[in-house]
Image (tube, rainbow, N blue to C red; front, side):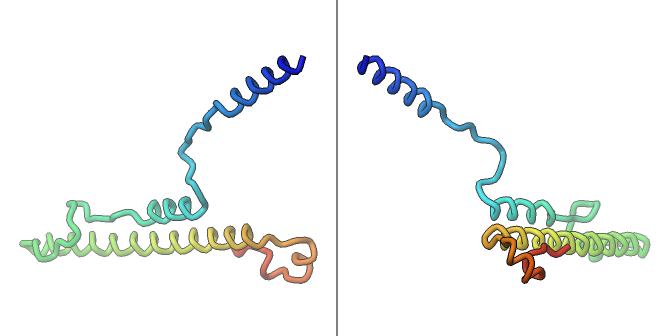
Length: 119
């Protein structure tokens, strides 16, 4: 009887230990997720012609005006990317702060400013 129990226990332990966890696409930690989110929010922006700067290459006034408008649009998009990145960083930092120092009932009652995430 003891041999049978020991054999069953060994088989059960081997089957439990034999299963390897599958890797998914989730990041290893919150900081990795934050890093990938920042990289996603700050793409490498280029002008429609694929260049970074085009005013010196313009031959006519019309080309120069078109390039100046493209540069203005690019600056606006980069500014929007920066705003979005700052917002996502602030939210992620608040989540990390709450995760590392979670607030209990009394902390929520007496220190509301620290325990509520900023919007």
